[in-house]
Image (cartoon, rainbow, N blue to C red; front, side):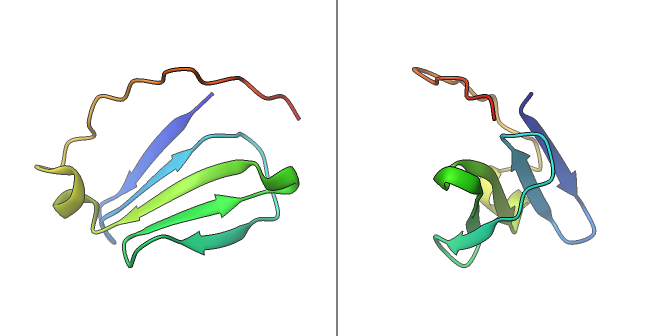
Length: 73
């Protein structure tokens, strides 16, 4: 199940795409956005720093997933 958590102390949003403990490498897309890449190059999670500034008034936006295949590991 995908899960999004927000930490107001550091203003960070983490979107967990795969459940479990994975050894990941992190790819920084920008100063605020990084990707956690796990085994077999699967995207495990997305971290957004300065989240309120990037997503608006502190509300998590509605998310729609299209053409997404579920992967079991």
